[in-house]
Amino acid sequence: MAYSEKVMDHFANPRNVGEMPDADGIGEVGNSKCGDIMKMYIKVKDDVITDVSFKTFGCGAAIATSSMATELVKGKPIDEALKLTNKAVMEALDGLPPVKVHCSVLAEQAIKAALSDYYKKQGIDPEPIVGKATECDECHFE
Amino acid sequence: MQRTVYADNAATTRLSEKAFEAMKPYFCEYFGNASSLYKLGGQSQKAVDNARMVIAQCINAPQPNNIYFTSGGSESDNWAIKGAAELGEKKGKKHIISSKFEHHAVLHTLEYLEKHGFEVTLLDVHEDGIVRPDELEKAIRDDTALVTIMFANNEIGTIQPIKELAGIAHKHGAVFHTDAVQAVGTVPIDVQDLGVDLLSMSSHKFHGPKGMGALYMRKGIRLPNLIHGGGQERGLRAGTENTAGIVGMSVALKESVDNMAERNIRLEKMRDRLIDGLLKIERSRINGDRINRLPGNVNMCFEGIEGESLLLMLDLQGISASSGSACTSGSLDPSHVLLAIGLPHEIAHGSLRLTFSDENTEEDIDHILSAVPKIVERLREMSPLWEKIVKESI
Image (cartoon, rainbow over all chains, first blue to last red; front, top):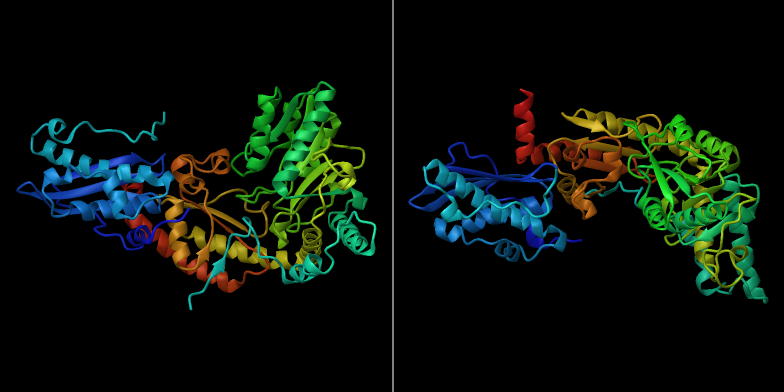
Protein backbone atom coordinates (compact mmCIF):
# COMPACT_ATOMS: atom_id res chain seq x y z
CA MET A 1 0.00 0.00 0.00
CA ALA A 2 1.43 3.32 -1.00
CA TYR A 3 0.09 6.82 -0.54
CA SER A 4 0.17 9.47 -3.27
CA GLU A 5 2.61 12.36 -2.98
CA LYS A 6 -0.28 14.66 -2.15
CA VAL A 7 -1.42 12.46 0.72
CA MET A 8 2.12 12.38 2.07
CA ASP A 9 2.41 16.15 1.73
CA HIS A 10 -0.84 16.77 3.65
CA PHE A 11 0.21 14.18 6.22
CA ALA A 12 3.70 15.57 6.77
CA ASN A 13 2.61 19.24 6.55
CA PRO A 14 -1.03 19.29 7.58
CA ARG A 15 -2.88 22.55 6.87
CA ASN A 16 -5.14 24.26 9.42
CA VAL A 17 -4.23 21.99 12.28
CA GLY A 18 -5.01 22.87 15.89
CA GLU A 19 -7.77 23.88 18.26
CA MET A 20 -9.90 26.96 17.70
CA PRO A 21 -10.87 28.49 21.06
CA ASP A 22 -13.57 30.80 19.64
CA ALA A 23 -15.10 28.36 17.15
CA ASP A 24 -18.73 28.88 16.11
CA GLY A 25 -19.18 25.17 15.48
CA ILE A 26 -17.31 22.02 16.53
CA GLY A 27 -17.91 18.56 15.07
CA GLU A 28 -16.38 15.29 16.17
CA VAL A 29 -16.76 11.96 14.36
CA GLY A 30 -15.26 8.49 14.60
CA ASN A 31 -14.20 6.69 17.76
CA SER A 32 -11.02 5.62 19.42
CA LYS A 33 -11.89 1.94 19.15
CA CYS A 34 -11.83 2.21 15.34
CA GLY A 35 -8.59 4.10 15.49
CA ASP A 36 -9.88 7.34 13.94
CA ILE A 37 -11.29 10.47 15.55
CA MET A 38 -11.68 13.72 13.63
CA LYS A 39 -12.58 17.00 15.24
CA MET A 40 -13.36 20.04 13.08
CA TYR A 41 -13.69 23.64 14.23
CA ILE A 42 -15.36 26.32 12.08
CA LYS A 43 -15.77 30.07 12.27
CA VAL A 44 -18.77 31.44 10.35
CA LYS A 45 -19.62 34.97 9.22
CA ASP A 46 -22.51 35.87 6.89
CA ASP A 47 -23.02 32.20 5.93
CA VAL A 48 -19.39 31.90 4.89
CA ILE A 49 -16.84 29.59 6.60
CA THR A 50 -14.21 32.21 7.32
CA ASP A 51 -11.87 29.89 9.20
CA VAL A 52 -11.55 26.18 9.83
CA SER A 53 -9.17 23.93 11.73
CA PHE A 54 -8.93 20.30 12.78
CA LYS A 55 -7.48 17.81 15.22
CA THR A 56 -7.23 14.17 14.23
CA PHE A 57 -6.27 10.92 15.90
CA GLY A 58 -5.69 8.38 13.18
CA CYS A 59 -3.60 7.02 10.36
CA GLY A 60 -1.81 8.93 7.63
CA ALA A 61 -4.90 9.00 5.44
CA ALA A 62 -7.06 10.29 8.30
CA ILE A 63 -4.70 13.20 8.89
CA ALA A 64 -4.33 13.96 5.15
CA THR A 65 -8.08 13.83 4.43
CA SER A 66 -8.79 16.12 7.41
CA SER A 67 -6.21 18.58 6.16
CA MET A 68 -7.55 18.50 2.59
CA ALA A 69 -11.18 18.84 3.71
CA THR A 70 -10.34 22.00 5.64
CA GLU A 71 -8.62 23.41 2.55
CA LEU A 72 -11.66 22.64 0.42
CA VAL A 73 -14.17 24.45 2.66
CA LYS A 74 -12.09 27.35 3.90
CA GLY A 75 -13.55 30.68 2.72
CA LYS A 76 -16.50 28.91 1.08
CA PRO A 77 -20.19 29.74 1.61
CA ILE A 78 -21.93 27.15 3.79
CA ASP A 79 -24.14 25.88 0.98
CA GLU A 80 -21.03 25.07 -1.04
CA ALA A 81 -19.30 23.41 1.92
CA LEU A 82 -22.37 21.23 2.39
CA LYS A 83 -21.85 19.84 -1.09
CA LEU A 84 -18.37 18.57 -0.18
CA THR A 85 -18.23 14.83 -0.81
CA ASN A 86 -15.69 12.26 0.28
CA LYS A 87 -15.04 11.68 -3.42
CA ALA A 88 -13.98 15.29 -3.88
CA VAL A 89 -11.59 14.97 -0.93
CA MET A 90 -10.12 11.79 -2.40
CA GLU A 91 -9.74 13.28 -5.86
CA ALA A 92 -8.03 16.35 -4.45
CA LEU A 93 -5.51 13.99 -2.82
CA ASP A 94 -4.90 12.07 -6.07
CA GLY A 95 -6.70 9.04 -4.67
CA LEU A 96 -6.52 6.81 -1.60
CA PRO A 97 -5.83 3.09 -1.20
CA PRO A 98 -9.20 1.22 -1.09
CA VAL A 99 -8.89 0.36 2.62
CA LYS A 100 -8.55 4.08 3.39
CA VAL A 101 -11.70 5.32 1.64
CA HIS A 102 -13.52 5.42 4.99
CA CYS A 103 -11.10 8.15 6.13
CA SER A 104 -12.43 10.45 3.41
CA VAL A 105 -15.98 9.63 4.51
CA LEU A 106 -15.06 10.64 8.04
CA ALA A 107 -13.64 13.95 6.78
CA GLU A 108 -16.87 14.76 4.95
CA GLN A 109 -18.89 13.83 8.04
CA ALA A 110 -16.67 15.91 10.31
CA ILE A 111 -17.33 19.06 8.27
CA LYS A 112 -21.07 18.35 8.34
CA ALA A 113 -20.96 17.69 12.09
CA ALA A 114 -19.27 21.07 12.66
CA LEU A 115 -21.97 22.79 10.56
CA SER A 116 -24.72 20.98 12.49
CA ASP A 117 -23.20 22.19 15.73
CA TYR A 118 -23.05 25.72 14.35
CA TYR A 119 -26.79 25.69 13.51
CA LYS A 120 -27.68 24.19 16.88
CA LYS A 121 -25.81 26.98 18.60
CA GLN A 122 -27.82 29.45 16.49
CA GLY A 123 -31.04 27.84 17.69
CA ILE A 124 -31.73 26.41 14.25
CA ASP A 125 -32.61 22.75 13.68
CA PRO A 126 -29.70 21.52 11.53
CA GLU A 127 -31.41 18.45 10.14
CA PRO A 128 -33.33 20.06 7.25
CA ILE A 129 -30.15 21.89 6.16
CA VAL A 130 -27.28 19.49 6.91
CA GLY A 131 -29.20 16.23 6.87
CA LYS A 132 -29.14 13.40 9.38
CA ALA A 133 -25.86 12.68 11.05
CA THR A 134 -24.62 9.38 9.64
CA GLU A 135 -22.25 6.94 11.20
CA CYS A 136 -19.32 5.44 9.38
CA ASP A 137 -20.68 2.10 8.13
CA GLU A 138 -17.59 0.25 9.23
CA CYS A 139 -17.66 1.57 12.78
CA HIS A 140 -20.41 -0.40 14.42
CA PHE A 141 -18.93 -1.66 17.62
CA GLU A 142 -20.84 -2.80 20.62
CA MET B 1 22.66 12.32 3.85
CA GLN B 2 19.86 11.22 6.13
CA ARG B 3 20.66 8.36 8.46
CA THR B 4 18.67 5.23 7.72
CA VAL B 5 17.86 2.70 10.41
CA TYR B 6 16.36 -0.67 9.57
CA ALA B 7 14.50 -1.71 12.71
CA ASP B 8 12.12 -4.31 11.34
CA ASN B 9 14.23 -7.47 11.53
CA ALA B 10 11.28 -9.52 12.80
CA ALA B 11 9.63 -8.86 9.42
CA THR B 12 12.68 -9.88 7.46
CA THR B 13 16.45 -9.48 7.49
CA ARG B 14 19.11 -8.57 4.97
CA LEU B 15 20.77 -11.57 3.33
CA SER B 16 24.18 -12.10 4.91
CA GLU B 17 27.16 -11.46 2.62
CA LYS B 18 28.60 -14.83 3.54
CA ALA B 19 25.36 -16.62 2.63
CA PHE B 20 25.10 -14.67 -0.62
CA GLU B 21 28.64 -15.66 -1.63
CA ALA B 22 28.00 -19.29 -0.75
CA MET B 23 24.82 -19.34 -2.85
CA LYS B 24 26.29 -17.81 -6.02
CA PRO B 25 27.97 -20.94 -7.51
CA TYR B 26 24.67 -22.85 -7.34
CA PHE B 27 22.90 -20.65 -9.87
CA CYS B 28 25.02 -20.90 -13.02
CA GLU B 29 27.95 -23.17 -12.21
CA TYR B 30 26.65 -26.05 -10.10
CA PHE B 31 23.13 -25.88 -11.45
CA GLY B 32 22.59 -29.64 -11.60
CA ASN B 33 19.52 -31.38 -10.25
CA ALA B 34 20.47 -33.00 -6.97
CA SER B 35 18.61 -36.13 -8.01
CA SER B 36 20.69 -36.66 -11.18
CA LEU B 37 23.28 -39.38 -11.38
CA TYR B 38 26.14 -37.54 -13.11
CA LYS B 39 28.78 -35.44 -11.38
CA LEU B 40 26.97 -32.13 -11.78
CA GLY B 41 23.95 -33.53 -9.94
CA GLY B 42 26.19 -35.08 -7.32
CA GLN B 43 27.69 -31.71 -6.50
CA SER B 44 24.22 -30.33 -5.77
CA GLN B 45 23.32 -33.39 -3.72
CA LYS B 46 26.48 -32.96 -1.69
CA ALA B 47 25.67 -29.31 -1.04
CA VAL B 48 22.13 -30.19 0.06
CA ASP B 49 23.37 -33.00 2.31
CA ASN B 50 25.96 -30.78 3.89
CA ALA B 51 23.44 -27.99 4.50
CA ARG B 52 21.04 -30.44 6.12
CA MET B 53 23.80 -31.59 8.44
CA VAL B 54 24.78 -28.03 9.37
CA ILE B 55 21.18 -27.07 10.12
CA ALA B 56 20.65 -30.22 12.18
CA GLN B 57 23.73 -29.37 14.24
CA CYS B 58 22.56 -25.79 14.77
CA ILE B 59 19.42 -26.98 16.58
CA ASN B 60 21.04 -30.15 17.98
CA ALA B 61 18.83 -32.51 15.97
CA PRO B 62 20.09 -36.11 16.34
CA GLN B 63 20.17 -36.79 12.58
CA PRO B 64 20.42 -34.64 9.44
CA ASN B 65 17.38 -36.47 8.11
CA ASN B 66 15.25 -34.95 10.87
CA ILE B 67 15.41 -31.77 8.77
CA TYR B 68 12.93 -31.37 5.92
CA PHE B 69 13.34 -28.37 3.65
CA THR B 70 10.26 -26.30 2.85
CA SER B 71 9.50 -22.92 1.28
CA GLY B 72 9.38 -21.12 4.63
CA GLY B 73 7.79 -20.80 8.05
CA SER B 74 4.19 -20.73 6.85
CA GLU B 75 4.62 -23.94 4.87
CA SER B 76 6.33 -25.66 7.80
CA ASP B 77 3.52 -24.60 10.15
CA ASN B 78 0.84 -25.75 7.73
CA TRP B 79 2.50 -29.08 7.18
CA ALA B 80 3.14 -29.74 10.87
CA ILE B 81 -0.37 -28.83 11.98
CA LYS B 82 -2.41 -30.39 9.20
CA GLY B 83 -0.16 -33.45 9.22
CA ALA B 84 -0.34 -33.96 12.99
CA ALA B 85 -4.10 -33.43 12.84
CA GLU B 86 -4.41 -36.14 10.22
CA LEU B 87 -2.30 -38.53 12.32
CA GLY B 88 -4.50 -37.77 15.32
CA GLU B 89 -7.71 -38.22 13.40
CA LYS B 90 -6.69 -41.77 12.51
CA LYS B 91 -6.61 -42.52 16.22
CA GLY B 92 -9.92 -40.75 16.81
CA LYS B 93 -8.29 -37.66 18.31
CA LYS B 94 -9.77 -34.44 17.02
CA HIS B 95 -8.79 -31.83 19.59
CA ILE B 96 -5.95 -29.33 19.20
CA ILE B 97 -4.52 -26.85 21.72
CA SER B 98 -2.73 -23.67 20.76
CA SER B 99 -2.48 -20.11 22.07
CA LYS B 100 -4.35 -16.89 21.34
CA PHE B 101 -1.39 -15.04 19.91
CA GLU B 102 0.08 -17.47 17.40
CA HIS B 103 1.11 -16.32 13.94
CA HIS B 104 -1.67 -16.38 11.36
CA ALA B 105 0.08 -19.31 9.64
CA VAL B 106 -0.96 -21.29 12.73
CA LEU B 107 -4.27 -19.62 13.63
CA HIS B 108 -5.69 -19.70 10.11
CA THR B 109 -4.62 -23.32 9.66
CA LEU B 110 -6.47 -24.12 12.89
CA GLU B 111 -9.56 -22.29 11.61
CA TYR B 112 -9.40 -24.45 8.51
CA LEU B 113 -9.23 -27.58 10.65
CA GLU B 114 -12.17 -26.40 12.74
CA LYS B 115 -14.22 -26.31 9.55
CA HIS B 116 -13.19 -29.92 9.05
CA GLY B 117 -14.50 -31.10 12.37
CA PHE B 118 -11.58 -30.45 14.72
CA GLU B 119 -12.08 -28.74 18.04
CA VAL B 120 -9.53 -26.08 18.95
CA THR B 121 -8.73 -24.63 22.38
CA LEU B 122 -6.68 -21.44 22.46
CA LEU B 123 -4.80 -20.84 25.69
CA ASP B 124 -4.66 -17.41 27.27
CA VAL B 125 -1.31 -15.60 27.10
CA HIS B 126 -1.91 -13.22 30.01
CA GLU B 127 -0.72 -9.65 30.36
CA ASP B 128 2.94 -10.66 30.13
CA GLY B 129 2.46 -12.61 26.90
CA ILE B 130 3.38 -16.01 28.33
CA VAL B 131 1.41 -19.26 28.25
CA ARG B 132 0.95 -20.98 31.63
CA PRO B 133 1.83 -24.70 31.71
CA ASP B 134 -0.80 -25.42 34.36
CA GLU B 135 -3.45 -24.06 32.01
CA LEU B 136 -2.27 -26.47 29.32
CA GLU B 137 -2.50 -29.25 31.91
CA LYS B 138 -6.14 -28.27 32.55
CA ALA B 139 -7.07 -27.96 28.87
CA ILE B 140 -5.48 -31.15 27.62
CA ARG B 141 -7.73 -34.17 27.05
CA ASP B 142 -7.49 -37.79 26.03
CA ASP B 143 -8.49 -36.82 22.51
CA THR B 144 -5.93 -34.01 22.16
CA ALA B 145 -3.98 -34.82 19.02
CA LEU B 146 -1.66 -31.84 18.94
CA VAL B 147 -0.36 -28.98 21.06
CA THR B 148 1.17 -26.16 19.03
CA ILE B 149 2.69 -23.19 20.87
CA MET B 150 5.08 -20.68 19.34
CA PHE B 151 8.61 -20.46 20.71
CA ALA B 152 8.73 -16.66 20.69
CA ASN B 153 6.01 -14.26 19.67
CA ASN B 154 6.60 -12.36 16.45
CA GLU B 155 5.19 -9.06 17.70
CA ILE B 156 6.11 -8.79 21.35
CA GLY B 157 9.00 -11.28 21.38
CA THR B 158 7.96 -13.11 24.55
CA ILE B 159 9.56 -16.54 24.97
CA GLN B 160 7.36 -19.47 25.99
CA PRO B 161 8.22 -22.31 28.42
CA ILE B 162 8.44 -24.80 25.53
CA LYS B 163 10.24 -27.60 27.38
CA GLU B 164 7.61 -27.72 30.10
CA LEU B 165 4.72 -27.45 27.62
CA ALA B 166 6.15 -30.25 25.45
CA GLY B 167 6.49 -32.43 28.54
CA ILE B 168 2.82 -31.97 29.41
CA ALA B 169 1.73 -32.72 25.84
CA HIS B 170 3.74 -35.95 25.84
CA LYS B 171 2.46 -37.05 29.22
CA HIS B 172 -1.00 -37.02 27.65
CA GLY B 173 0.02 -38.64 24.37
CA ALA B 174 -0.25 -35.52 22.20
CA VAL B 175 2.20 -34.42 19.52
CA PHE B 176 4.02 -31.14 20.28
CA HIS B 177 4.85 -28.59 17.57
CA THR B 178 6.46 -25.20 18.00
CA ASP B 179 6.54 -22.38 15.49
CA ALA B 180 10.11 -21.24 16.18
CA VAL B 181 10.34 -18.88 13.22
CA GLN B 182 11.32 -15.91 15.40
CA ALA B 183 13.63 -17.93 17.62
CA VAL B 184 15.85 -20.09 15.40
CA GLY B 185 19.13 -18.29 14.81
CA THR B 186 18.17 -15.72 17.44
CA VAL B 187 18.27 -17.66 20.71
CA PRO B 188 19.77 -21.09 21.53
CA ILE B 189 17.59 -24.00 20.41
CA ASP B 190 18.22 -27.61 21.35
CA VAL B 191 15.38 -29.77 20.04
CA GLN B 192 16.46 -32.79 22.10
CA ASP B 193 16.55 -30.87 25.35
CA LEU B 194 13.24 -29.17 24.54
CA GLY B 195 11.69 -32.51 23.63
CA VAL B 196 9.62 -31.09 20.77
CA ASP B 197 8.33 -33.37 18.01
CA LEU B 198 8.04 -30.75 15.30
CA LEU B 199 9.66 -27.33 14.92
CA SER B 200 9.19 -24.76 12.15
CA MET B 201 11.88 -22.36 10.99
CA SER B 202 12.27 -19.70 8.35
CA SER B 203 15.51 -18.73 6.66
CA HIS B 204 14.91 -15.04 5.99
CA LYS B 205 14.50 -14.30 9.69
CA PHE B 206 18.19 -15.07 10.30
CA HIS B 207 19.79 -13.37 7.28
CA GLY B 208 19.19 -16.30 4.94
CA PRO B 209 17.36 -16.10 1.61
CA LYS B 210 13.57 -15.71 1.38
CA GLY B 211 11.47 -18.60 0.15
CA MET B 212 13.36 -21.12 2.31
CA GLY B 213 12.43 -22.83 5.52
CA ALA B 214 12.57 -26.18 7.23
CA LEU B 215 10.60 -28.44 9.48
CA TYR B 216 12.34 -30.48 12.14
CA MET B 217 10.60 -33.82 12.54
CA ARG B 218 11.60 -36.07 15.42
CA LYS B 219 12.39 -39.70 14.59
CA GLY B 220 9.29 -41.75 15.19
CA ILE B 221 6.90 -39.16 13.82
CA ARG B 222 6.08 -39.45 10.16
CA LEU B 223 3.76 -36.78 8.87
CA PRO B 224 1.70 -37.49 5.77
CA ASN B 225 3.08 -36.24 2.44
CA LEU B 226 2.88 -32.50 1.94
CA ILE B 227 3.59 -32.47 -1.79
CA HIS B 228 3.16 -35.62 -3.82
CA GLY B 229 5.65 -36.30 -6.58
CA GLY B 230 9.29 -37.26 -6.62
CA GLY B 231 11.30 -38.76 -3.81
CA GLN B 232 12.81 -35.56 -2.44
CA GLU B 233 12.82 -34.95 1.33
CA ARG B 234 12.49 -38.67 1.99
CA GLY B 235 9.45 -38.80 -0.22
CA LEU B 236 7.43 -36.43 1.96
CA ARG B 237 7.86 -33.15 0.13
CA ALA B 238 8.41 -33.57 -3.58
CA GLY B 239 10.02 -31.03 -5.87
CA THR B 240 13.56 -30.35 -7.08
CA GLU B 241 15.67 -28.95 -4.27
CA ASN B 242 16.36 -25.21 -4.21
CA THR B 243 20.09 -25.86 -3.87
CA ALA B 244 21.18 -22.22 -3.69
CA GLY B 245 18.47 -21.42 -1.15
CA ILE B 246 19.31 -24.45 0.97
CA VAL B 247 23.01 -23.57 0.96
CA GLY B 248 22.26 -19.92 1.79
CA MET B 249 19.98 -20.92 4.64
CA SER B 250 22.56 -23.21 6.22
CA VAL B 251 25.41 -20.70 5.95
CA ALA B 252 23.26 -17.92 7.43
CA LEU B 253 22.07 -20.11 10.29
CA LYS B 254 25.59 -21.28 11.11
CA GLU B 255 26.78 -17.68 11.14
CA SER B 256 23.87 -16.59 13.37
CA VAL B 257 24.46 -19.44 15.81
CA ASP B 258 28.23 -18.92 15.90
CA ASN B 259 28.06 -15.30 17.01
CA MET B 260 24.85 -15.65 19.02
CA ALA B 261 26.19 -15.37 22.56
CA GLU B 262 28.24 -12.28 21.89
CA ARG B 263 25.54 -10.66 19.73
CA ASN B 264 22.78 -11.20 22.25
CA ILE B 265 24.71 -9.49 25.05
CA ARG B 266 25.05 -6.46 22.79
CA LEU B 267 21.44 -6.57 21.55
CA GLU B 268 19.98 -6.93 25.03
CA LYS B 269 21.91 -3.89 26.15
CA MET B 270 20.66 -1.89 23.18
CA ARG B 271 17.11 -3.15 23.66
CA ASP B 272 17.04 -2.27 27.36
CA ARG B 273 18.47 1.20 26.76
CA LEU B 274 15.83 1.85 24.11
CA ILE B 275 12.99 0.58 26.30
CA ASP B 276 14.16 2.69 29.25
CA GLY B 277 14.47 5.73 27.00
CA LEU B 278 11.05 5.32 25.40
CA LEU B 279 9.36 4.64 28.75
CA LYS B 280 10.27 8.20 29.72
CA ILE B 281 7.54 9.29 27.30
CA GLU B 282 4.41 10.04 29.27
CA ARG B 283 1.72 7.35 29.08
CA SER B 284 3.84 4.81 27.30
CA ARG B 285 4.13 1.12 28.07
CA ILE B 286 6.19 -1.89 27.12
CA ASN B 287 4.16 -4.78 25.72
CA GLY B 288 5.01 -8.26 26.97
CA ASP B 289 7.37 -9.46 29.65
CA ARG B 290 10.58 -7.42 29.83
CA ILE B 291 12.86 -10.32 30.77
CA ASN B 292 11.52 -13.33 28.86
CA ARG B 293 11.72 -11.71 25.45
CA LEU B 294 13.87 -11.88 22.35
CA PRO B 295 17.09 -9.89 22.67
CA GLY B 296 16.26 -7.59 19.75
CA ASN B 297 12.55 -6.97 20.37
CA VAL B 298 11.02 -3.70 21.56
CA ASN B 299 7.24 -3.30 21.44
CA MET B 300 5.69 -0.21 22.98
CA CYS B 301 2.36 1.61 23.06
CA PHE B 302 1.96 5.36 23.22
CA GLU B 303 -1.50 6.47 24.28
CA GLY B 304 -3.42 9.02 22.24
CA ILE B 305 -1.73 8.37 18.90
CA GLU B 306 -2.21 5.91 16.08
CA GLY B 307 0.54 3.54 14.94
CA GLU B 308 0.43 4.03 11.20
CA SER B 309 0.97 7.78 11.40
CA LEU B 310 3.83 7.10 13.81
CA LEU B 311 5.40 4.71 11.28
CA LEU B 312 5.02 7.19 8.42
CA MET B 313 6.68 9.93 10.47
CA LEU B 314 9.50 7.55 11.40
CA ASP B 315 9.90 6.60 7.74
CA LEU B 316 10.27 10.30 6.88
CA GLN B 317 13.21 10.27 9.28
CA GLY B 318 14.75 7.17 7.72
CA ILE B 319 13.57 4.67 10.34
CA SER B 320 11.82 1.47 9.19
CA ALA B 321 9.62 -0.07 11.88
CA SER B 322 6.23 -1.73 12.21
CA SER B 323 3.03 -1.44 14.21
CA GLY B 324 0.13 -3.58 15.31
CA SER B 325 -2.36 -0.83 14.57
CA ALA B 326 -5.48 -1.69 12.60
CA CYS B 327 -4.49 0.73 9.86
CA THR B 328 -1.33 -1.18 9.09
CA SER B 329 -3.11 -4.52 9.06
CA GLY B 330 -5.73 -3.40 6.57
CA SER B 331 -8.54 -4.35 8.95
CA LEU B 332 -10.37 -2.36 11.57
CA ASP B 333 -9.08 -4.38 14.47
CA PRO B 334 -5.64 -3.84 15.91
CA SER B 335 -3.21 -6.73 16.28
CA HIS B 336 -4.68 -9.93 17.76
CA VAL B 337 -1.46 -10.25 19.77
CA LEU B 338 -1.95 -6.93 21.56
CA LEU B 339 -5.63 -7.69 22.17
CA ALA B 340 -4.62 -11.13 23.52
CA ILE B 341 -2.42 -9.53 26.19
CA GLY B 342 -5.45 -7.50 27.24
CA LEU B 343 -4.81 -4.09 25.72
CA PRO B 344 -7.94 -2.09 24.89
CA HIS B 345 -8.40 -1.25 21.20
CA GLU B 346 -7.55 2.43 21.55
CA ILE B 347 -4.20 1.69 23.17
CA ALA B 348 -3.35 -1.19 20.85
CA HIS B 349 -3.78 1.20 17.90
CA GLY B 350 -0.80 3.18 19.15
CA SER B 351 1.79 0.42 19.08
CA LEU B 352 5.30 0.45 17.72
CA ARG B 353 7.52 -2.58 17.11
CA LEU B 354 11.27 -2.12 16.68
CA THR B 355 13.31 -5.26 16.05
CA PHE B 356 17.08 -5.40 15.79
CA SER B 357 19.74 -7.68 14.39
CA ASP B 358 23.51 -7.89 14.38
CA GLU B 359 23.59 -5.08 11.84
CA ASN B 360 22.15 -2.46 14.21
CA THR B 361 24.34 -0.19 16.28
CA GLU B 362 24.14 2.02 19.37
CA GLU B 363 23.95 4.97 16.96
CA ASP B 364 20.72 3.52 15.58
CA ILE B 365 19.29 3.50 19.09
CA ASP B 366 20.41 7.13 19.56
CA HIS B 367 18.68 8.11 16.33
CA ILE B 368 15.43 6.36 17.34
CA LEU B 369 15.58 7.86 20.83
CA SER B 370 15.92 11.33 19.40
CA ALA B 371 13.15 10.85 16.79
CA VAL B 372 10.33 9.01 18.61
CA PRO B 373 9.60 11.41 21.49
CA LYS B 374 9.30 14.38 19.10
CA ILE B 375 7.02 12.47 16.75
CA VAL B 376 4.82 11.25 19.60
CA GLU B 377 4.57 14.82 20.89
CA ARG B 378 3.70 16.18 17.45
CA LEU B 379 0.99 13.57 16.85
CA ARG B 380 -0.43 14.08 20.32
CA GLU B 381 -0.64 17.81 19.72
CA MET B 382 -3.04 17.15 16.88
CA SER B 383 -4.90 14.28 18.56
CA PRO B 384 -8.39 14.88 20.01
CA LEU B 385 -8.02 11.56 21.84
CA TRP B 386 -4.90 12.79 23.62
CA GLU B 387 -6.78 15.99 24.53
CA LYS B 388 -9.43 13.81 26.17
CA ILE B 389 -6.88 11.66 28.00
CA VAL B 390 -5.18 14.76 29.43
CA LYS B 391 -8.49 16.34 30.49
CA GLU B 392 -9.69 13.15 32.18
CA SER B 393 -6.46 12.76 34.13
CA ILE B 394 -6.62 16.23 35.67
